[in-house]
Image 1: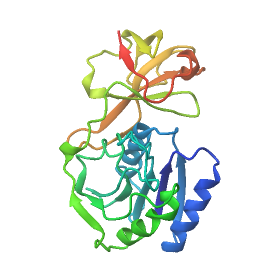
Image 2 (image 1 turned 45 degrees about the vertical axis):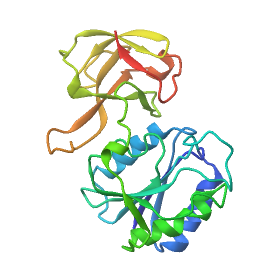
Image 3 (image 1 turned 135 degrees about the vertical axis):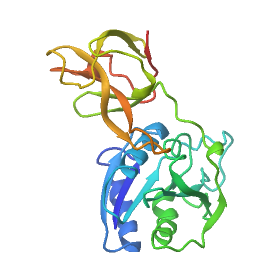
Image 4 (image 1 turned 90 degrees about the vertical axis):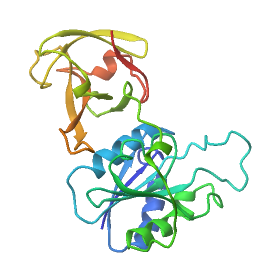
Length: 262
């Protein structure tokens, strides 16, 4: 089984090694790929759950995600209780097990054949993704559905915002949650983009490298997946500074900051 482990532990954090060990105990032999998202960023978590889950990959796949800000209840927590575990089966057969918090399920909610809560303790450990959840995830991955609880409906899950920074890649390109099909722009049309408090001129491009060196492009990026209704591929807009770094241009914005065309 190929397992994508998506969590906000931090790049290089030993927590990834600890969780990997527990998953391999329950699901030997498996291949596990770890992806670190910013702390408490349910938006980035949900974005990558969809990007990895809805695109081609090995047939036997599990996405195990953990980003639990524990913001569902602002009162003092008893026994380290946090948001509950969920299971989703995507239309392509990929299994997704992880905490339902914020936007973690928002990008896949219309692509899931089924979604359920998982009947497992919501407390018992500060490190639930290591100590509590792996055995449940492994059981579900192996076809044991005895832990599945009530069904979740798409309307119970918040829609993903359509105007945010979703990710900053290693080149400083800014991936957004703006769907390309919602824009009515012509190639090489000049636009003004605000990210957070920083404003910059840009050129709309239907292909990032079709702009001169030093030009900020606003174009459909490399991230996207099939539409839930079987229509055209969803593509997400990206800010790309050819020969430079768009993230630096906009003052190093954080994931979830607002992006607007003005």
